[in-house]
Length: 485
Ligand code: GLN
Image 1 (cartoon, helix red, strand yellow):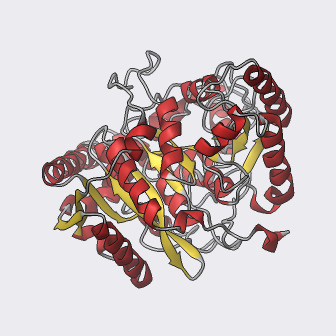
Image 2 (cartoon, helix red, strand yellow):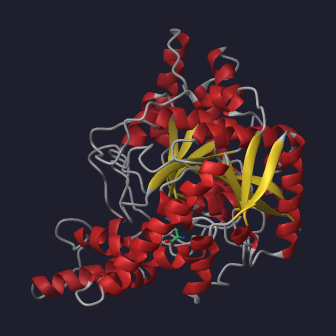
Image 3 (tube, rainbow, N blue to C red):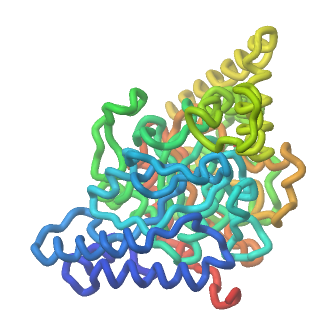
């Protein structure tokens, strides 16, 4: 079952070769067996899932088939789900039950998917290792002593380990692509505005974007088609029409002009460099013309990001005060103490660090020196990408400078942790779509190839990703679950 693409599974569901109830039970059993070691789920929605699966089966028997009818899916615990706890990986929201569904959840429900659970994540999506979650660290299925990446580490780990056929994620600076790369699966971050952010708990609103994890580019394309579109509840969502990404990604491939920014090869691990060179050779075989380009401001991406993202987060997270939202302290003498204690108890260290940095950067006297300067760098980065896309169809590079690091290795060194996003943050600053797909193994640990496109060029990058997957089988490799039970 696991090796089947979503398209293949939908064919089997439609022809009643398998039922959604069987498929859902299969994944729930696997989660129960393997997840105690992995910790990729915060909440399992077994009862809810089995009920929905059986409803879908009834619908199918009546000939009523929706595009994703009966497909089990894991949802990142950053998306509000009506009646099911949404924690965002934080003690602050550990008891929060949303009265409504996020648009992503609603759309995927309407397309027929079955939510099997909510996945673990770095607290409020701040992190690159999934070690900042209030609900414990997530392990990398390829090596339980290593991180799965973050912040969507739970979603990536469960798909990689075969505990779910697909999952959602969010990407503010790399949180879909970096964990996809470190766990050997595909992770797609769409153009800013492609997918509604309504009901997706905000970290840095001008950068946050919802996307997906799956085993193949085809599967990402199918899911994206049913998540995207204008939403009047999100004023930043785009009115750009939604193509059938699956059809477009499978259309005949006629070759492309591809740019490799020389800055994306600096500071790269030697073995990852060699693996990347091999991937490039594959692309040359299918009529891709490779040219070197330069995105010199991308080197400043992490610095700019680490001002803009905390600035926005300090504002977004002000609503968690124990009164309007979130954990409320048990003993407070007055309202000021109530705010202070509720926030001190509810937030973890990394979240507090970001709030402090952001508040500082936005304060009078420092605003021009930090926030405005970071915004200027952001404009420069966007302009350089725009100029690059006048010359090339797509830009590629490795997703991360190296493979998954050891648990704890970077936890006490925030700068080293932030640098794991060096190749991913610039695309968020420019609002561009990008995907990470498996490109090879370094000593049994996966590496990822990042493909970046111009605004709303998802079909183009999915098409290159699909072409690469026709020639290689890195995306079919799986970690050995038997090792850890
Ligand atoms: N790792 C980055 C951070 O900690 C990106 C997080 C994300 O994309 N949500 O900010």
